[in-house]
Amino acid sequence: MTASRVVELEGFGGPEVLKVVTRDVPAPGPGKAQVRQTAIGFNFIDIYQRQGVYPLPLPTGLGFEAAGVVEAVGASVVSPKVGDRVAYMHAGVGAYAERRNVPADKLVTLPDAISDEMAASLLFKGMTAQYLVRRTHHVVPGDVLLVHSAAGGVGQILSRWATALGAKVYGTTGSPEKRAAALATGCREVLDLNDPAWPENFVAAAGQKARVVYDAVGKDTLLRSLDCAAPFGLVVSYGAASGKSPAIDPELLNKKGCLFLTRPSVFPHNADPATFRANAADLFDAVARGHVSVDIGARFALDDIAEVHRAAEERRVTGTLLIIP
Image (cartoon, rainbow, N blue to C red; front, side):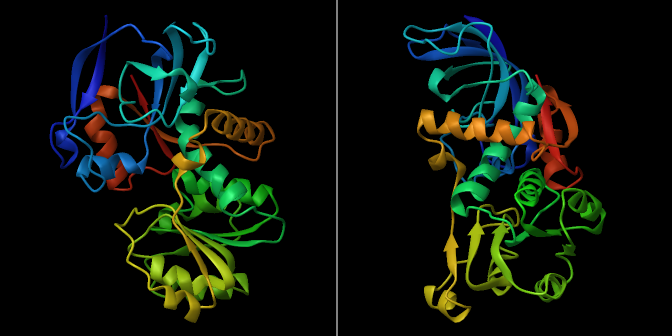
Protein backbone atom coordinates (compact mmCIF):
# COMPACT_ATOMS: atom_id res chain seq x y z
CA MET A 1 0.00 0.00 0.00
CA THR A 2 1.10 3.54 -0.77
CA ALA A 3 -0.49 6.59 0.83
CA SER A 4 -1.91 9.26 -1.45
CA ARG A 5 -3.65 12.58 -0.91
CA VAL A 6 -6.83 12.65 -2.96
CA VAL A 7 -9.82 14.94 -3.40
CA GLU A 8 -13.23 13.52 -2.54
CA LEU A 9 -16.77 14.80 -2.17
CA GLU A 10 -19.62 13.19 -0.30
CA GLY A 11 -22.33 15.48 -1.64
CA PHE A 12 -22.92 17.84 -4.55
CA GLY A 13 -22.69 21.58 -4.15
CA GLY A 14 -20.29 24.50 -4.17
CA PRO A 15 -16.48 24.35 -4.08
CA GLU A 16 -16.59 23.86 -0.32
CA VAL A 17 -17.72 20.22 -0.77
CA LEU A 18 -14.26 19.32 -2.11
CA LYS A 19 -12.15 17.75 0.64
CA VAL A 20 -8.52 16.58 0.55
CA VAL A 21 -8.10 13.25 2.36
CA THR A 22 -5.41 10.57 2.57
CA ARG A 23 -6.16 7.14 1.15
CA ASP A 24 -4.12 3.98 0.65
CA VAL A 25 -3.41 3.02 -2.96
CA PRO A 26 -2.88 -0.75 -3.40
CA ALA A 27 -0.33 -2.29 -5.73
CA PRO A 28 -1.63 -2.19 -9.32
CA GLY A 29 -3.61 -5.22 -10.38
CA PRO A 30 -3.47 -7.00 -13.74
CA GLY A 31 -3.60 -4.61 -16.66
CA LYS A 32 -3.01 -1.54 -14.50
CA ALA A 33 -0.16 0.86 -13.80
CA GLN A 34 0.45 3.01 -10.75
CA VAL A 35 1.21 6.62 -11.67
CA ARG A 36 2.86 9.17 -9.40
CA GLN A 37 1.18 12.27 -10.72
CA THR A 38 3.21 15.43 -11.24
CA ALA A 39 0.56 17.63 -12.86
CA ILE A 40 -3.24 17.44 -12.98
CA GLY A 41 -5.51 19.11 -15.50
CA PHE A 42 -8.72 20.98 -14.77
CA ASN A 43 -11.76 20.94 -17.08
CA PHE A 44 -15.14 22.63 -16.82
CA ILE A 45 -16.87 19.25 -16.72
CA ASP A 46 -15.32 18.89 -13.24
CA ILE A 47 -17.58 21.72 -12.08
CA TYR A 48 -20.68 20.15 -13.61
CA GLN A 49 -19.93 16.89 -11.82
CA ARG A 50 -19.23 18.64 -8.51
CA GLN A 51 -22.54 20.49 -8.79
CA GLY A 52 -24.48 17.32 -9.67
CA VAL A 53 -25.41 18.56 -13.15
CA TYR A 54 -23.74 15.37 -14.35
CA PRO A 55 -24.24 13.32 -11.15
CA LEU A 56 -21.77 10.66 -10.08
CA PRO A 57 -22.23 7.90 -7.49
CA LEU A 58 -21.20 9.27 -4.09
CA PRO A 59 -18.71 9.50 -2.52
CA THR A 60 -16.56 10.26 -5.53
CA GLY A 61 -13.34 11.77 -6.72
CA LEU A 62 -13.08 14.25 -9.57
CA GLY A 63 -10.79 15.03 -12.47
CA PHE A 64 -10.16 13.33 -15.81
CA GLU A 65 -6.58 14.08 -16.83
CA ALA A 66 -3.10 14.04 -15.37
CA ALA A 67 0.52 13.34 -16.21
CA GLY A 68 3.26 11.70 -14.22
CA VAL A 69 5.67 8.79 -13.92
CA VAL A 70 4.87 5.07 -13.83
CA GLU A 71 6.06 3.63 -10.49
CA ALA A 72 4.71 0.08 -10.78
CA VAL A 73 2.80 -2.11 -13.22
CA GLY A 74 0.52 -5.09 -12.75
CA ALA A 75 0.61 -8.48 -14.40
CA SER A 76 0.34 -8.60 -18.21
CA VAL A 77 1.31 -4.95 -18.68
CA VAL A 78 3.88 -4.64 -21.47
CA SER A 79 3.57 -0.91 -22.06
CA PRO A 80 4.12 1.51 -20.45
CA LYS A 81 7.13 0.53 -18.36
CA VAL A 82 8.24 1.62 -14.90
CA GLY A 83 9.91 5.01 -15.25
CA ASP A 84 7.98 6.06 -18.36
CA ARG A 85 6.41 9.49 -18.41
CA VAL A 86 2.73 9.12 -19.24
CA ALA A 87 -0.55 10.98 -19.40
CA TYR A 88 -4.24 10.10 -19.59
CA MET A 89 -7.58 11.82 -20.10
CA HIS A 90 -10.27 9.15 -20.08
CA ALA A 91 -9.49 6.69 -17.30
CA GLY A 92 -12.56 7.61 -15.24
CA VAL A 93 -12.87 10.27 -12.56
CA GLY A 94 -10.30 10.50 -9.80
CA ALA A 95 -7.38 12.40 -11.32
CA TYR A 96 -7.31 14.85 -8.38
CA ALA A 97 -4.75 12.74 -6.52
CA GLU A 98 -1.04 12.29 -5.82
CA ARG A 99 -1.01 8.66 -6.95
CA ARG A 100 -3.46 6.53 -8.82
CA ASN A 101 -3.82 3.10 -10.41
CA VAL A 102 -4.88 3.49 -14.04
CA PRO A 103 -5.68 0.93 -16.76
CA ALA A 104 -2.48 0.74 -18.79
CA ASP A 105 -4.35 0.93 -22.09
CA LYS A 106 -5.65 4.38 -21.08
CA LEU A 107 -2.11 5.76 -20.84
CA VAL A 108 -0.11 7.40 -23.58
CA THR A 109 3.68 7.65 -23.34
CA LEU A 110 4.89 11.22 -23.64
CA PRO A 111 7.51 12.24 -26.20
CA ASP A 112 10.47 14.27 -24.94
CA ALA A 113 9.06 17.47 -26.46
CA ILE A 114 5.91 17.30 -24.30
CA SER A 115 6.45 18.25 -20.66
CA ASP A 116 4.31 16.83 -17.87
CA GLU A 117 2.69 20.23 -17.31
CA MET A 118 1.96 20.63 -21.01
CA ALA A 119 0.42 17.15 -21.19
CA ALA A 120 -1.77 17.63 -18.13
CA SER A 121 -3.03 21.00 -19.31
CA LEU A 122 -3.30 19.98 -22.97
CA LEU A 123 -4.43 16.38 -23.37
CA PHE A 124 -8.15 16.57 -22.57
CA LYS A 125 -8.60 19.95 -24.22
CA GLY A 126 -6.27 19.12 -27.11
CA MET A 127 -7.98 15.82 -27.81
CA THR A 128 -11.30 17.66 -27.77
CA ALA A 129 -9.97 20.12 -30.34
CA GLN A 130 -8.53 17.18 -32.31
CA TYR A 131 -11.88 15.49 -32.89
CA LEU A 132 -13.54 18.86 -33.55
CA VAL A 133 -11.16 19.80 -36.40
CA ARG A 134 -10.44 16.28 -37.70
CA ARG A 135 -13.60 14.24 -37.24
CA THR A 136 -16.71 16.24 -36.36
CA HIS A 137 -15.75 18.47 -39.28
CA HIS A 138 -12.55 18.02 -41.25
CA VAL A 139 -11.33 21.61 -41.41
CA VAL A 140 -9.98 22.68 -44.80
CA PRO A 141 -8.47 25.95 -46.04
CA GLY A 142 -11.06 28.67 -46.51
CA ASP A 143 -13.61 27.32 -44.02
CA VAL A 144 -15.33 30.12 -42.10
CA LEU A 145 -15.65 29.06 -38.46
CA LEU A 146 -17.18 30.68 -35.39
CA VAL A 147 -15.63 29.54 -32.09
CA HIS A 148 -17.41 30.44 -28.88
CA SER A 149 -15.26 30.90 -25.74
CA ALA A 150 -12.24 31.44 -27.96
CA ALA A 151 -10.13 32.57 -24.99
CA GLY A 152 -10.88 29.44 -22.98
CA GLY A 153 -8.79 26.29 -22.72
CA VAL A 154 -10.34 24.37 -25.63
CA GLY A 155 -11.20 27.53 -27.52
CA GLN A 156 -7.60 28.71 -27.73
CA ILE A 157 -6.34 25.34 -28.97
CA LEU A 158 -9.22 24.96 -31.42
CA SER A 159 -8.75 28.46 -32.83
CA ARG A 160 -4.97 28.08 -33.24
CA TRP A 161 -5.24 24.66 -34.87
CA ALA A 162 -8.03 25.64 -37.24
CA THR A 163 -6.15 28.81 -38.22
CA ALA A 164 -3.03 26.74 -38.94
CA LEU A 165 -5.16 24.50 -41.17
CA GLY A 166 -6.14 27.54 -43.23
CA ALA A 167 -9.58 28.31 -41.82
CA LYS A 168 -10.92 31.82 -41.28
CA VAL A 169 -11.67 31.78 -37.58
CA TYR A 170 -13.89 34.23 -35.70
CA GLY A 171 -14.32 34.03 -31.95
CA THR A 172 -16.51 35.13 -29.09
CA THR A 173 -15.72 35.81 -25.44
CA GLY A 174 -17.80 36.57 -22.39
CA SER A 175 -15.80 39.65 -21.42
CA PRO A 176 -13.90 42.37 -23.30
CA GLU A 177 -10.82 41.64 -21.17
CA LYS A 178 -10.40 38.27 -22.91
CA ARG A 179 -10.52 39.71 -26.41
CA ALA A 180 -6.73 40.07 -26.70
CA ALA A 181 -6.17 36.43 -25.74
CA ALA A 182 -8.63 35.27 -28.40
CA LEU A 183 -7.09 37.48 -31.06
CA ALA A 184 -3.67 36.04 -30.20
CA THR A 185 -4.90 32.59 -31.26
CA GLY A 186 -5.46 33.79 -34.81
CA CYS A 187 -9.09 34.90 -34.66
CA ARG A 188 -9.80 37.51 -37.32
CA GLU A 189 -12.32 39.23 -35.09
CA VAL A 190 -13.70 38.59 -31.62
CA LEU A 191 -17.31 39.32 -30.67
CA ASP A 192 -18.54 40.20 -27.18
CA LEU A 193 -21.32 37.82 -26.10
CA ASN A 194 -22.66 40.51 -23.77
CA ASP A 195 -23.69 42.51 -26.85
CA PRO A 196 -27.16 41.24 -27.87
CA ALA A 197 -26.23 41.87 -31.51
CA TRP A 198 -23.30 39.46 -31.52
CA PRO A 199 -24.75 37.17 -34.24
CA GLU A 200 -25.30 40.12 -36.56
CA ASN A 201 -21.88 41.50 -35.65
CA PHE A 202 -20.29 38.18 -36.58
CA VAL A 203 -21.96 38.04 -40.00
CA ALA A 204 -20.96 41.65 -40.65
CA ALA A 205 -17.35 40.98 -39.66
CA ALA A 206 -17.04 37.75 -41.66
CA GLY A 207 -19.07 38.93 -44.64
CA GLN A 208 -20.91 35.61 -44.60
CA LYS A 209 -22.25 32.98 -42.25
CA ALA A 210 -20.14 30.13 -40.85
CA ARG A 211 -19.54 26.70 -42.32
CA VAL A 212 -19.27 25.50 -38.70
CA VAL A 213 -20.21 27.05 -35.35
CA TYR A 214 -18.41 25.49 -32.38
CA ASP A 215 -20.57 26.17 -29.31
CA ALA A 216 -19.19 25.36 -25.87
CA VAL A 217 -21.48 27.81 -24.05
CA GLY A 218 -24.83 26.04 -24.39
CA LYS A 219 -27.96 27.56 -22.85
CA ASP A 220 -27.17 31.22 -23.52
CA THR A 221 -25.96 30.84 -27.11
CA LEU A 222 -27.16 27.70 -28.90
CA LEU A 223 -30.38 29.03 -30.41
CA ARG A 224 -28.62 32.12 -31.74
CA SER A 225 -25.69 30.01 -32.94
CA LEU A 226 -28.14 28.55 -35.45
CA ASP A 227 -28.50 32.06 -36.91
CA CYS A 228 -24.74 32.18 -37.53
CA ALA A 229 -24.54 29.00 -39.61
CA ALA A 230 -24.69 29.13 -43.41
CA PRO A 231 -27.28 27.01 -45.25
CA PHE A 232 -26.38 23.33 -44.87
CA GLY A 233 -23.88 24.40 -42.19
CA LEU A 234 -23.01 22.56 -38.99
CA VAL A 235 -23.57 23.65 -35.39
CA VAL A 236 -21.46 21.69 -32.91
CA SER A 237 -22.73 21.83 -29.32
CA TYR A 238 -19.84 20.38 -27.34
CA GLY A 239 -20.14 22.13 -23.96
CA ALA A 240 -22.52 23.88 -21.59
CA ALA A 241 -20.62 26.60 -19.75
CA SER A 242 -23.81 28.63 -19.25
CA GLY A 243 -26.02 25.62 -18.52
CA LYS A 244 -27.73 22.79 -20.37
CA SER A 245 -28.59 23.62 -23.96
CA PRO A 246 -32.29 24.02 -24.86
CA ALA A 247 -34.14 21.33 -26.77
CA ILE A 248 -34.19 21.95 -30.52
CA ASP A 249 -37.19 21.15 -32.70
CA PRO A 250 -35.81 19.43 -35.84
CA GLU A 251 -38.13 21.58 -37.94
CA LEU A 252 -36.22 24.66 -36.72
CA LEU A 253 -33.06 23.29 -38.35
CA ASN A 254 -34.97 23.11 -41.62
CA LYS A 255 -36.22 26.68 -41.32
CA LYS A 256 -32.76 28.00 -40.47
CA GLY A 257 -31.25 26.60 -43.66
CA CYS A 258 -31.28 22.77 -43.54
CA LEU A 259 -28.67 22.88 -40.79
CA PHE A 260 -26.86 19.99 -39.15
CA LEU A 261 -26.65 19.86 -35.34
CA THR A 262 -24.47 17.50 -33.35
CA ARG A 263 -23.59 16.95 -29.68
CA PRO A 264 -20.26 15.07 -29.69
CA SER A 265 -17.95 14.08 -26.82
CA VAL A 266 -14.27 13.38 -26.50
CA PHE A 267 -14.69 9.98 -24.83
CA PRO A 268 -16.43 8.00 -27.62
CA HIS A 269 -13.88 9.38 -30.07
CA ASN A 270 -11.09 7.84 -27.96
CA ALA A 271 -12.72 4.75 -26.50
CA ASP A 272 -10.52 2.37 -28.50
CA PRO A 273 -6.95 2.35 -27.09
CA ALA A 274 -5.28 2.24 -30.53
CA THR A 275 -7.45 5.12 -31.76
CA PHE A 276 -6.72 7.10 -28.60
CA ARG A 277 -2.98 6.76 -29.09
CA ALA A 278 -3.22 7.62 -32.79
CA ASN A 279 -5.26 10.73 -31.97
CA ALA A 280 -2.73 11.67 -29.29
CA ALA A 281 0.09 11.26 -31.81
CA ASP A 282 -1.81 13.60 -34.16
CA LEU A 283 -2.10 16.14 -31.35
CA PHE A 284 1.59 15.87 -30.42
CA ASP A 285 2.50 16.30 -34.09
CA ALA A 286 0.42 19.49 -34.19
CA VAL A 287 2.34 20.73 -31.14
CA ALA A 288 5.66 19.93 -32.81
CA ARG A 289 4.58 21.84 -35.93
CA GLY A 290 3.64 24.86 -33.83
CA HIS A 291 -0.03 24.52 -34.74
CA VAL A 292 -1.07 23.89 -31.15
CA SER A 293 0.13 25.41 -27.91
CA VAL A 294 -1.40 25.93 -24.52
CA ASP A 295 -1.38 28.94 -22.22
CA ILE A 296 -1.28 28.00 -18.54
CA GLY A 297 -3.26 30.72 -16.85
CA ALA A 298 -2.60 29.71 -13.24
CA ARG A 299 -1.16 26.92 -11.11
CA PHE A 300 -2.74 25.79 -7.84
CA ALA A 301 -1.70 23.32 -5.16
CA LEU A 302 -3.90 20.24 -4.69
CA ASP A 303 -4.76 21.52 -1.20
CA ASP A 304 -6.28 24.62 -2.84
CA ILE A 305 -8.68 22.64 -5.03
CA ALA A 306 -11.73 24.63 -3.89
CA GLU A 307 -10.03 27.83 -5.05
CA VAL A 308 -9.38 26.24 -8.47
CA HIS A 309 -13.12 25.74 -8.91
CA ARG A 310 -13.93 29.25 -7.69
CA ALA A 311 -11.43 30.80 -10.10
CA ALA A 312 -12.93 28.84 -12.99
CA GLU A 313 -16.55 29.62 -12.13
CA GLU A 314 -15.80 33.33 -11.69
CA ARG A 315 -13.90 33.39 -15.02
CA ARG A 316 -10.91 34.93 -13.25
CA VAL A 317 -8.27 33.17 -15.33
CA THR A 318 -7.60 33.29 -19.06
CA GLY A 319 -6.15 30.03 -20.37
CA THR A 320 -5.91 26.71 -18.59
CA LEU A 321 -5.75 25.93 -14.87
CA LEU A 322 -3.18 23.45 -13.62
CA ILE A 323 -3.13 21.55 -10.31
CA ILE A 324 0.20 20.53 -8.80
CA PRO A 325 0.03 17.62 -6.28
